[in-house]
Image 1 (spheres, rainbow, N blue to C red):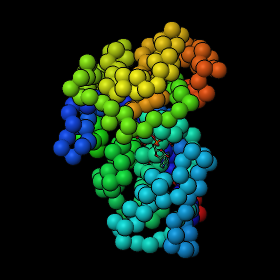
Image 2 (image 1 turned 135 degrees about the vertical axis):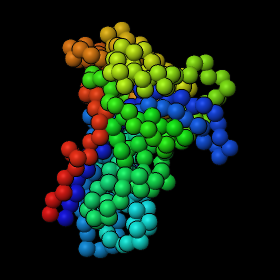
Image 3 (image 1 turned 90 degrees about the vertical axis):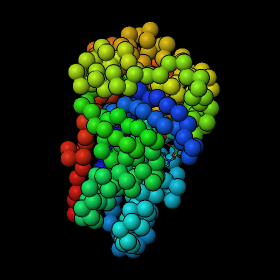
Length: 296
Ligand code: ATP
């Protein structure tokens, strides 16, 4: 038997760090939403009890270091079963990009195995297991749109953003999330995003307000290390983006645009300048019921 699950990428409409906690993590407040750029996870039942993994991308580990693999191991431990599984990842989300690709693969694996093995675990239970793998995994279990607090694992759902185009541009290099947070000086943050106001803009479906409120305290940190982030932002603005921001710890930059023709113009302006460019729709709603499938 096989189950296929789609794993969407997320972007941050806001990302704020309030203070550094005693446990070393930053206390975060962020508005996250999904876009229609997906990895596809196929989960195949096996005769043996081993877990194996293959990925279409050479950029992600193909062994126990892969977050999808870790999700399968942890779920088996929690449930106390030893059923084997082969995980196949068809990778489309850029890696180490600030789009939560690995977290989304882990969340999709948890959701898919819950279904394949008939475990009947709730989203809350899957999210709690996911939190042991990574801070963004709980959001990815639910997908959609939410305010995330704590390390990112405390979630409050929000309505989806108003419809628009999203152009994503990933510079040639990746970024280590730990490295970026390590360089962040919370006391020196010049401007904190208005998280509550962003939530209100989404509730009111106010596109202009949403675009004005985009903000990410990690952007200046990553920009200082990688000047191409600033260059991409500038180009996107010049070519008519309504709003532009780096997602997560970067280095992917996204532009929000109402008009399709302008979105296409921005994509064209980035050709030859940035290798990984995507023009996708804002999604912001839960994907599971529409996109998961089970076959025998
Ligand atoms: P976030 O936005 O949650 O910080 P990210 O988009 O910046 O995540 P990922 O693409 O998740 O970063 O990759 C981060 C690291 O995790 C990479 O070094 C990668 O090798 C490793 N990794 C492990 N499993 C996966 C996976 N299934 N997909 C992508 N990366 C993975």
